[in-house]
Length: 134
Image 1 (cartoon, rainbow, N blue to C red):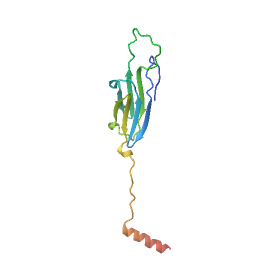
Image 2 (image 1 turned 180 degrees about the vertical axis):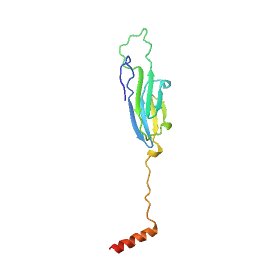
Image 3 (image 1 turned 60 degrees about the horizontal axis):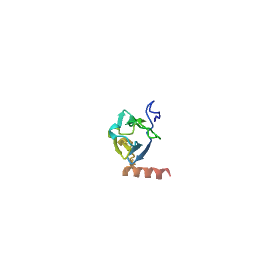
Image 4 (image 1 turned 135 degrees about the vertical axis):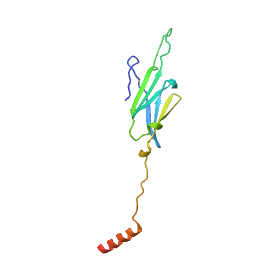
């Protein structure tokens, strides 16, 4: 659940996109101006938490005419399904975008199921039974 509160009250919204690419879910979160060292990603069971911090700039001697850049703590939490590999989660940060890749578990990947045919002797028996019934 995303949270959006002002800096006096707590965490702020972290805009993101979530998609599935091949055998992974890919989360891209906008965190411009964030020091990558301030990003904290935790997995606790099936809960993925992302937390980042953008400190407020020094304001001594500064008179702002406009101030739109958000500062403070940014937090997102996601409940992961049972069909993901939580041990294989990876993350990277490039040009203000945090990318978290969550692989799909092997047991949840699409697979082809072969249809077993009848043994040759059984096919003959089925044909004879069909002729007898006709």
